[in-house]
Image (cartoon, rainbow, N blue to C red; front, side, top):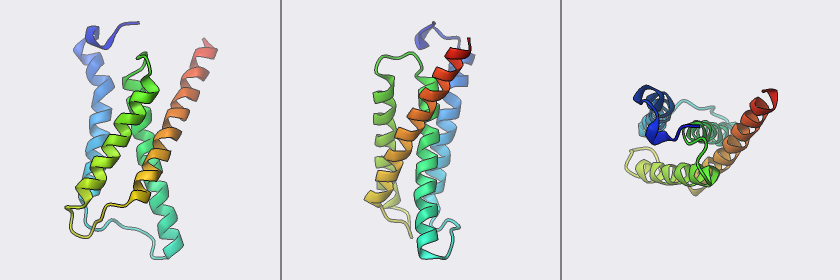
Length: 130
């Protein structure tokens, strides 16, 4: 397996461009003062928790794909996703109508763990088919 430093630039770009695009989408959504959401209190909470879990699950899977083959890659992915979630909550403190929420950080972290688990399951399954 080639290390990332020896990958051709197109291969490197194909690994990292989806990560950067997803980070940009998260930033864009965090910049919106009011996103569409259900009016019901419990449904709104469920939708919000699910959205945070999904967006950071996808981020963790994309980071796992980009960092495949790295020692302690899972830990690195979790730390990177957590730091981005932390910076995202900080960013929201400057957006009118948005506030940082520790509960969002919790669901971002949960999503990262689920994304890591899903990526691990997918790669093990692919390896067992070969």
